[in-house]
Each structure stands twice: as C-alpha cells, then as structure tokens.
Image 1 (tube, rainbow, N blue to C red):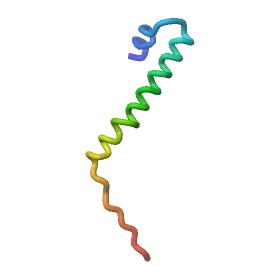
Image 2: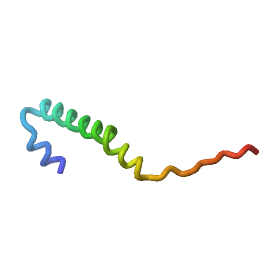
Image 3: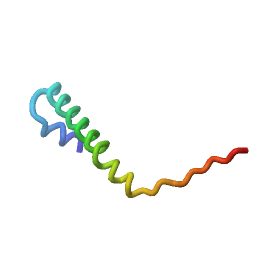
Image 4: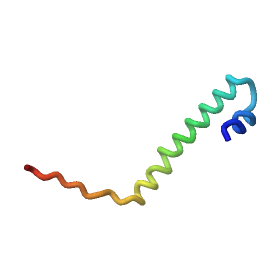
Length: 53
C-alpha cells in the first residue's frame, strides 16, 4: 500500500516526501479536529471516585 502511494506521487523523492508529510499532517489534523471529538461523545466516561483513607 505504501509503495503504491509512493509511486503515484509526482516529482522527485524530496517532493514526494514533502507531499507525503503534508498529507499525513492533514489526516492527523482531521482526526484531532473532527473524528476524535465525535467518537468522544459516543463513548461514555467512567465515573471515577477517589476516597480519602
């Protein structure tokens, strides 16, 4: 899968690396901004209690 992605990217290796880094950053940004908050609402938070001893 990664080999196929590397082959379809345009340009020399340094440009491919730059494009790949930008794509990874965009995916991570989308996950943090939209996906993780949606999933967080669907998962119930456990009730945590701390008792004094």
